[in-house]
Image (cartoon, rainbow, N blue to C red; front, top):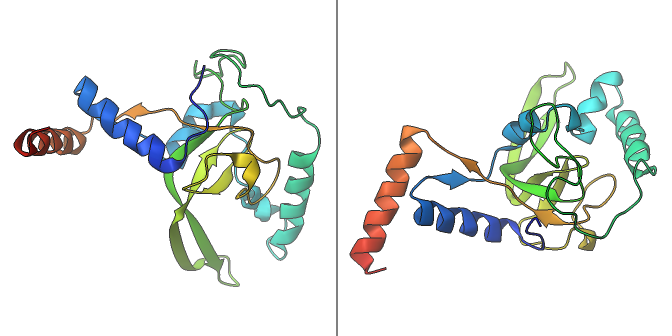
Length: 187
């Protein structure tokens, strides 16, 4: 069964613990990595449809909200065993199931100029991107998606995570430094 009822801090703490336990660096995926892994099951961001009517992105937002709120799939409060929703074209199980997954990506508020270029961007890392049946935004301390925090669409049924192994040289150096620090501190 997937782990659920966890907030962003729980997920990152587990990643750090698991990294130390296995000797390999593990982390939450970025929203872009999760979207690529989800393949055809990636529903995207409600605001990405703004290109349909760049003069009025609210039209696209309302259309997307209506689609997501419609009963594409009835609410399913029971957590499902691994594999219940099947594999996607990438061979990865359960993307778009009933567990929304934390990512390392911060919510970004972007202001567009009249020509469509980015005028300003403000990152809010107290709110994180989750990937699931659709993209959602949630305060990092929330463990129950139905309690609020989802900006649009069906509220997340369960909050969980999956990890990716980070085999970049920098990740290995950081893990080795953390292990040395722990050894020096007597852990």
